[in-house]
Structures are given as structure tokens and as C-alpha cells.
Length: 209
Figure 1 (cartoon, rainbow, N blue to C red):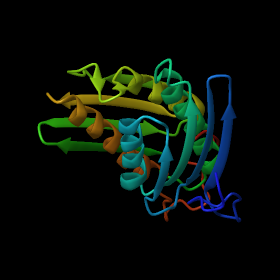
Figure 2: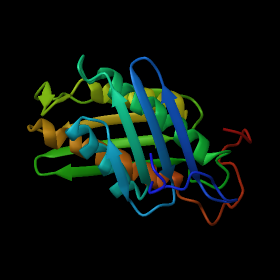
Figure 3: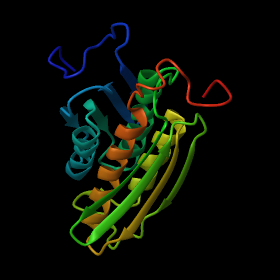
Figure 4: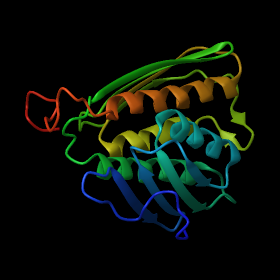
């Protein structure tokens, strides 16, 4: 990535930004995030629909995302999508830090025409994904809908969050997937918001998350 990246490469005190690189024999990824951004994105994964979904996270979560991935798409999209989820999860864990002052929990219902999805998130420190999305099609463009699970599994494992994702209605797979990502973004935004009534306090009776 060049110096024109949307997210600064180093954080000043109090800034919730992070940069993570992940390089394997299958993918080479750099992810930069700003949790207190304005929804700007710079995305390149080689899978157009996946870029469109990542853009939903940025736009509706008000999180600046700068993600570049070079993956083994000559095989399929699995490694690219899963590894972006892993890398993004690592970046979120780094950016959110000790979680002092955040609301911790977030949920959202998002409709798109006939489709309706619900996402609930807990920045608990305990990874867990519970997902029920009965996609009506196996492919959306060059995106395999099965990889939606792999993305969120990678994210939840490495961000240390519990995620419940349910598509409640939907006939069009594009709409189903888009409502999931938009609801995820809105739930993230709610959970990561700083609570003015709980400044500097970790939102747990245990005293740590």
C-alpha cells in the first residue's frame, strides 16, 4: 500500500486505529482500520462482490477500511475470504485495545426489499459464531455464499467476539448477504461506541474482557 492509504500507519494516544499484515503461501494481506472514521474505504480483494460487502462494513459502521489482498483466486475464493476475515479480526482486536469505555454489546436488524437480517455482537473476548443464513443461491457473481460463514468465523475467532447472525427472511441471495453485512456493520458501530457514562471502565463485572 502507498502513503495515500485512508488510515494512518501509526496511532496517536487515544486513537483507535490498527494495521495488520498477514502473509502466507495462499494470501498476502494488509488491513488498516480506524474505528472512529467516517466510513471511507479502499478495497482490493480480487472478488468484486466481497469488496462490495466490505464496503458495507465501512459505510454503515463508520469505520475506515483499507484492505489489500493478493490471493490464490486461480484456485477459488476460499483462502482470500477466510484470511481477510482473520486479518480484519486481528486488526479490530488491536484497535479496540483493553475495551475500556465501549458499550460492548450491539445489535441491528436491517432490511433490503424482501430480505431481513439480524446480527448481535458481544466484544466478550470469547470467540463464537452462531449463524443461520439459508442462502437461496450458491453463488453471487464470483462469490461463493458458503464463504460468508468462513469470513465471520475468521473474524470472530481473531477479534474475540461472540456473533449471532440470522437471516430472518429473503428470496434473493444478494439481498440476504447484503442485509447480513449491513446489520453486522450497524451492530459493530453500536458495540464499539464509547459510553459517556462509563468512561475508562471495562464493561464487565469481572474487570477484564
